[in-house]
Image (cartoon, rainbow, N blue to C red; front, side):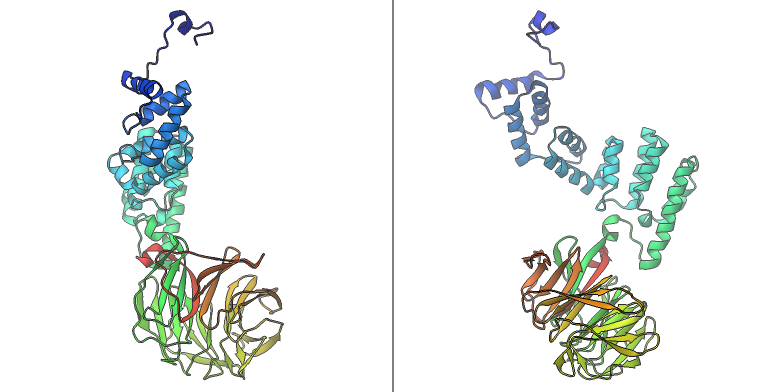
Length: 491
């Protein structure tokens, strides 16, 4: 300005109309006197000035201050988020954004939500962990549209972010469906109709109304089966922590089997109660008694096909029993013709495949195939690296097996109707013994054993520990079950 033909050269004066005398005094103190001038009041004013005048040293000082002292309130967080994004301070902008999302209910009360731009509001509405009840989210969206008068396309974008399955039907009826606001725009009507359909589908499945996203969000969890006071404990992979569950009275003892059917975990047999059926309703967090088995069971296995549980083999019986959802009595539907212990079972098509473990007291690689329609039992001979005890996890088209001695097999399923199986030995890891369970997730196997949680890498054979908060001590583990459940099940 002072070297080119500009007003400032001719007058010798540079005017900064947006900068107060107090702020510029702080700039002079910093550069001339070396004073530490940055504080909560002037920090963002100074950053604006450093951007304007390219005062890099002062900008660094402001950034260091914010990294250690950023103060967010429901009054300033929206402006702080916007400013930090503009300054390219991504980490701090993310911190401010999370504060906005976490305190959305308070921002609604002081009407700071109305200060959000279209893009900012869409980012907030996209979040699963939005803190408001969904009725209030929708009410704020309608109010924001009324104040900003956006295009129909923007209205549709905003309405599409609403989780209608968490909006009460009374609010939809009284304040949305029949309003002039919706009737004026056919595109909005289509979004609302789709949302109501999602509402009906969601609550047909869970039979519980959830009014917010956090409780309704589906979590990725592993239920660990243990011969301890808790019997069941749960590792939440979604938020990396362990949760306690209600204690089961009349524990089954060791060497029981378990399976998931709809919203419940069924536990059968065991060394202490060989005919028992224990049921844990995950949604209600309640234990109950199921019908007794026809035969004593321990060291047996279980599988689920559609709405039917199957209990297979074990130390005391060679039979196969089934229990359909809603029935109150187990039925014997098949016979293995041999004693099979410590095996695992998975439903593939209309067949139950029984694998690994011991056959007439000897380690076997023979696969039994039980047809659930004809009740016929056949055998499939494939080469497995079997162990004294085997656990399984089905992720079509592959069936993963982990054995007592730490060896891992993958069975490739080429045809679910006519079982044609190809076995592939992966490698051998730590010898887990009788006390372990595992799940398959995102291309890796996660094993739960007395060593804790480990993720196994098939590529290089390595393993790494998985750390979760509140992890209990591990012993007497009899398996693991993988589920997707709403957050309210853990609260």
